[in-house]
Length: 394
Image (cartoon, rainbow, N blue to C red; front, top):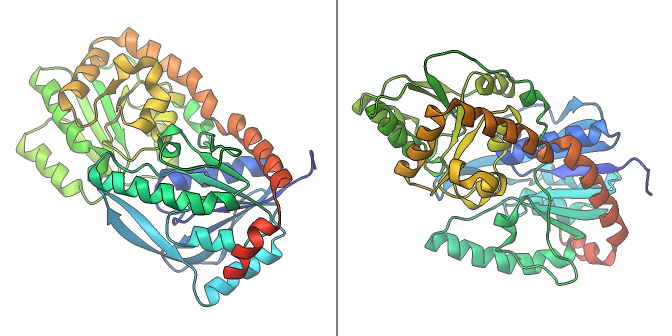
């Protein structure tokens, strides 16, 4: 079994065409496993009509199963997905005929495609948890519910993974089978090629992500306003789209903030150029971050990142917390850290170089072989009786 090529099902509960960290993780994981010679099928819903089967690259195909509907909750937008009728029959047939050695389910709490695939699929079961509820009353209730659900799910899982301590901390796990931490498998090679712009008079700040309340862009604008009021030579580019964009644009107009650009949506190919054209990346997300793929991308591009000290972002930036992390929602603290970097080009260069080296820990070429070892271990632990009951219930 040690060197055998594996057949792997990666189950994503979200439309792969919608921007998001889980989608990026799943796509990059599949591509990295394919490069290692393994055969990967991604099962994911589709919000719009399209072909059922799509080839993404060598050894990697996507099977679109079920429909996805957008839902807004706790200041963020996600999807509920389900396979029913002929779609559920197609899911059961694909899992039965696929001959998968491993079924790797992401975000099992997202209703309900992940659990449907989990129940239908033979082979070893691996689950990755991405969810980090906010530190609010509602978040505390969510954590209690998730801990209870994990008691029901994890006895049927061969290996459980969390992308950081943030999602692991509120889950229950058997003593004999702790939840492992494996960072998202992200292809950072294209960002390592990002260049830099030297000799310009102004320092360029960049935000990349969805424009929704949870992402804290309003806090960034307040911090930017403080820097402008002090006469610092800065510009701000906001790359992304979302429900909060009209309110953010109104804030810029009402406060006459200079040199703020809204770029709207963008694709992966444009992201490298965005990082290359900036001096500092800003990540002010208030809560709900389990890791921070955008931060890893910026680090790989050699750019310093000023971020909110939520639990996920601390995973990447704790080594330079004084320079780079501000309390979530604290526009003054965010402005203070930006100011120091704006005024000190040598500090920007030093922290950028540190980030570029640190990001290698999260690159797919580092993480994918570790994931394969996890799969092989899961196959050794897998026992048919632990999954037959679930399969019968599908």
